[in-house]
Length: 192
Image (cartoon, rainbow, N blue to C red; front, side):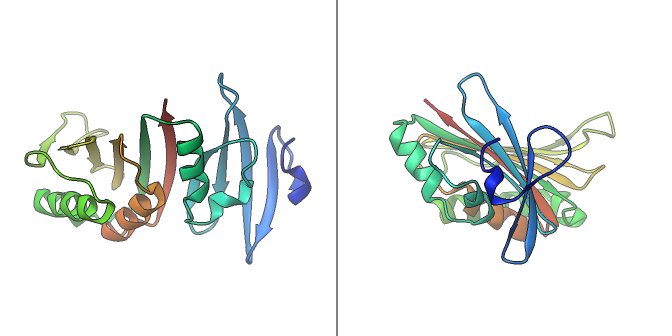
C-alpha cells in the first residue's frame, strides 16, 4: 500500500493512519482508470481530497500549499481545472440569502483573479425538501462557477471550472470562512 511507511495500517482495505503536527489523519487510496490516486485526508478540523501524481507526498493534502497541484497541472499541460467543494454545517442565514451568495461570488472572482462575464444568476427552487434551496451560476471568461445551497442540510456544493489556473485550496478556505462552514471536502480534476 502506498505511503504505509508513514503511519500504521488500519483495519480495512486501503487505509493508513498518519500523524502530523498533533493531528491524526486517515488516508484512503482509490485507483481510477487512468491510475491516478485519490487521497482523502480526514481530520477533526476538515476533510480534503486531492488527486496526486506518483512523486507527490501524500501529506501535501494536509497543507494549503497548491504547488503539487500546480506542478501536476503544468506537467499534464492541462486544459483546465475543476474544483468541487462540499461545505458542511454552513450559516443557514447566509445560504438562504441571494444577495449574500452574489457577494460571495463577486469576492471569490476577485480573490482568484477571474473576470466575471455577465451577472450572477441566483434562483431559489426545489419542490423536494432534500434539494430545495438556491442554485447559482456565474459565467467567467475562462469558464464557469456554479453552486447549490441545500436548505435541509445547510450545505453548499460549489464547482469552479476554469482553463486559467487558480488555487483550489484558496477557493475552499475562502468559501468555508465566508459561509461559516464547519468543514469541507475538496476534490479536483485536471481536464486534459
